[in-house]
Length: 138
Image 1 (tube, rainbow, N blue to C red):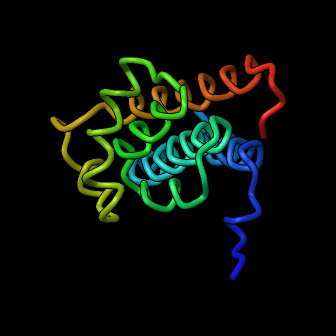
Image 2 (cartoon, rainbow, N blue to C red):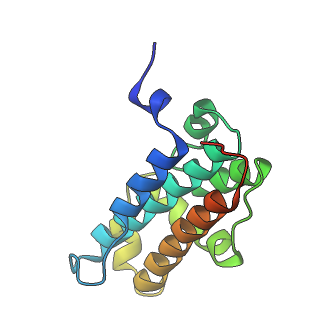
């Protein structure tokens, strides 16, 4: 059985990631901004997996675990920044269990704007990496 995920290319994942990036003048609700940032981070990372030669099954295995996604992307040649490596384990426990509101309410847990900036950095890095590959992979 073919699903929508099976037909999405790396470029499609990246395009969707860009669409989800929170904008500075967007909703003032921190949990919404964190949700947007987490989705953008996840989709960009899955774009890297596919672009590097991974499969949709690899993307499904990572699910909403941003750390697992980064590990899979690394196996396919993508190197995340130290900031992305630090952001993934901060977001994953809350994002993967739909509890970003808890992270947003805990003033000592994380800086929401920094996490949004790091997610945007992940998207930009994946985009640059995909453009730098000269072998025409999708």
